[in-house]
Amino acid sequence: MNSLRRRIAVILLVSIVFVVVLATYATVALLGPVPAPRDEATARQLVLIDGLISKASPAGQLQIVPEPAGVVDQARTAKVMAELASAGTPLDVRITHRDAEGEATAYLRLREGGWLVIPILAHRQGRQFRLVLAAWLALITIGTGAIAVLAANRVTRPLSVIEAAVAAVRPDGTLPPVPELGSAEVRATANAINRLSQRLSDAMNSRIRMVAAAGHDLRTPLTRVRLRAEFLPEDERALWLKDLDELERIAESAIRLVREETEAAEMVPIAMDEFVRTTVEDLIAQNYPITLGEIEAVTIRGRPEALTRAFRNVLINAATHGGGAEISVATADEVALIRVVDNGPGIPRDLLGRVFEPFFRVDPARRQRVPGTGLGLAIAREIVVRQGGHIRIDNRPEGGLVQEIMLRRAA
Image (cartoon, rainbow, N blue to C red; front, side, top):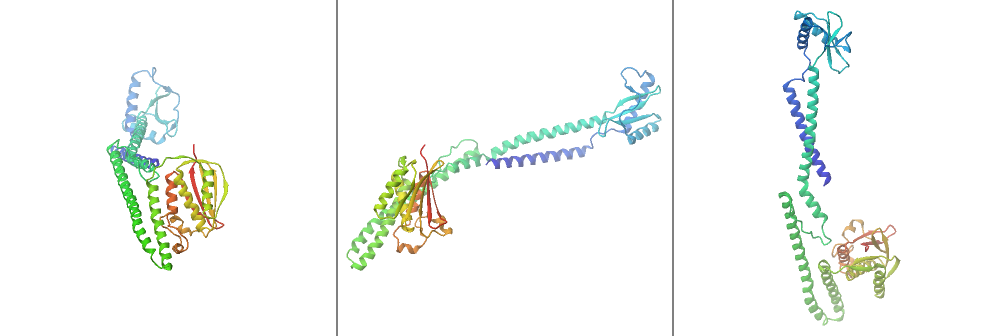
């Protein structure tokens, strides 16, 4: 946002200054060149001074020097003397400069000897004009710069509101209400964001209610089908009951996923070393091949029941599909890092981004060999993200997967 604000300010500043400079240049060009010394005027000035000197003593405030000082401007001297000769007053004069760009000075030879110093003011007026022009352009630049910064701030203020709203998105994907204050543009932007937030919230709640209702309503027909399956022959009954068990697991997982999106239990301190050991012991008792790695003592704040479901899903997924799992707990900066590694076949690189999608399976044929609903990792991710954490999965160089869960440490 700051970069955009600077770019807008620079564009406005350059555009305004360019237009002003162009207009100033055009005005100066139309009015004519900067006032410069005119040889005719200098000649008339010298004739007038010579007449005054002939009637009065050259003493007093007149400056008389033995010789002209500075560099003689031969071209201008010749022009001035030619003007004097054409006016019938052939005087001996010299036009000099102190340096290549200094002020011009006229020296008039006196009859009594010496040279009278006569400043030529026209060139000084030219320098003064350039100084005024430079001050004018500097004032324009400073003024337009201030206006450009103010304009850029006003233009980008609605974008700042959007940026702040996006940065404040909650873990559940909802937006907090944006105060509808400020200018008309800012109020309109805030109102649009609030309406968008409300529509998103309504859509999410509608989806949650639909999934919960579907999962709940499936239980009754599944129960009826299970009762009817009991009267089937033994060989057919086993297949029917297996499919019914899978359908019930899917319905139950869908309901759990909805509960995770709507549940708002209190966050309490959790000692992760004890929590992980207890969870692993329960799964080992159910014959899952899971081992404990290095476990560091670290405390987080979270919802114990929800985290238990998340860790069970991650560990069961690794133990079932990876041929065994190992879990470790470490601390890194301000987070607790839980790593679960397995020795399975891994996941193709192009499918890693989809592992947390509901009902996603790397190999659909596994459904026939490995029980599961395809919602375990989706539920785990929902729980971890809602508690301010992060979960990622990647392939290990030596084979298998590594699942990392990062949760903020308790203060």
